[in-house]
Image (tube, rainbow, N blue to C red):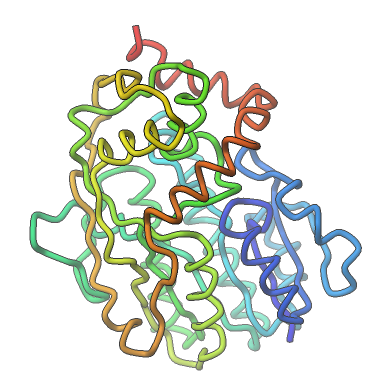
Length: 333
């Protein structure tokens, strides 16, 4: 079986690439190597007979069509994903997350063989009040350029299903965390800042609530869905049931790194910051899948990994330093 993984040098994509190579798939990894990608994430795959890496852009129609030809499965993790960055530069999100998906859909339509597993997010549903949860058929209500780009991508996927009958599965996942995530993200950023004894910039009152899933569990969910793939287009929510506020996570990171909670520094909230995400993932649970790693265990593993590796990743990325100044410089003054 042959699989094309887009964004395979990024956080989720690299974990999935290693899993599929281990499972015996012939894996092609297409990655543009933007700031969020890191070739070190898949360094262990180099030389494997069933793995190859192609540097390229998801919006390169000719390249994508060539790579899709003959594939059994395409897994799309190539995306701009950081909400904060989408507030600074919305256009790049529209290009990668929407135009790139259309390019991929056109290639699959031309090939006529490959199924697509497209990665989306619970953020397409927007903020929900207690005790509401969004099931697969809930209406979209995105509030950031990032979530709007992911919702638009899903609408294109739906249009290609209705018009052309493409075999597509959409996974909408809650917040994913674990080793290899880019240092701009909440848990890596706060861990690295805590270890360095530097202020941890917490937006607003920190009571924004998110649902968290450890990356190994997401990989198993993807394996589970891929094994049961059919020609029907489906939307599947992937969650954990563990919802926690940002300030609780910040305090727990301080405990795990043995740093004082006084490092938590409330700063001006970002515009349009959603208060609560909550998805109903009972559809997937009913098929037999459930997460195995509880949040506390996953957080401890993640903090331990960034304790060992995080600072070198942050210090070796000049682009991240510039972004951090742009996003938090004035807020931390």
